[in-house]
Picture 1 (cartoon, rainbow, N blue to C red):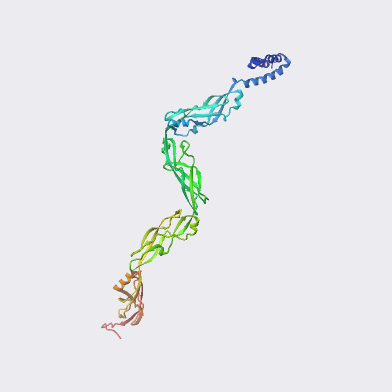
Picture 2: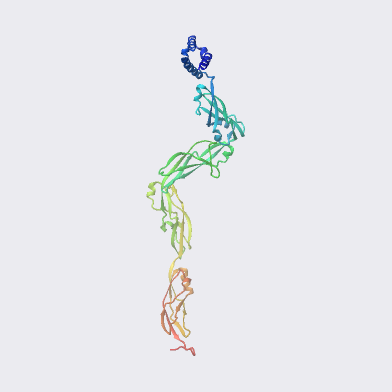
Length: 442
């Protein structure tokens, strides 16, 4: 104990504080240190004075090491002025950094990760290629003694710049409304950075979400950069002329409106003589239209530019347009196909050139019949052809004996698919033939 007091006394008497103290203070310190009864009090005073000494003396320092610090990049503007750019993101190399600060005893506790800054200064890089760039650290409460790692390896390329087109798309659209991007501002972006990265950019895409949107709007939206395969390119190492795109979206109600089916609205003119318009249809039958709600409320059907059938003698299809498009904001199809069915006119006729054929007649019977006619209905050319060529009818007399009969004939329906044929019943007489001399029997 005595030795400790003696050492403290010695250090106190040799300290700068004692040397600079006024003579009365020196006398009090000397008296306290020589008086045995007051040595305990002098010990306490010495401790207090020593604490004061080490807290006020900047020459007394201690090292303090901070771990897991994160650095940040500086000097990018100077790097770009040198026509260079980073080809890779250095953030991965700027984590887990250890810095040792030699701090005065008074500031030791103040040295923290919040006030020790680690920087990667790129302003001194002068050439492209892979090279090591030193890390630097500063502290307001001491001198940086060491930093680990001392440098990081980075690759630099020539600085390049290009203009990129902005492509807008919509998501979340509804069947009840029509949406359209009327304007993007800007429509082109200027992107600069490492040459290999800049040259891989094909476009910039901005996506506007129109979910639950019922009126036109303008929004500032983020965008992504895409390569030719539509893969996203990170923007961390690029300088873009803007951070967002202003997108104007027009919104109008839309409805499915039927196309008029009235033949008088679909065709004009007359078919060739002997032909008639059988039917006319349109495809599509309905078209989605977007317009002001007042216009949609009064719209019951769409009109087309009529198709001419003047002199037509066969069916055909033709493409035509919807008329009166000026007030529509959008229409799903401006053109429709008109399917025109042209057929010969149907006539009725009488065929008197009729040949009767018998089936099932026994060998010992001979058949005779009264001439009959046939009524036909169908296309004019086929009716007239049948009148010229005649028709064969078949009378079935199977299992019939000699006698007089009124029998309904039949004909080959597959041969006349487009005709309606009605025949009179045939008056048939079956007469037995003598088996000996072939004469008729009474």
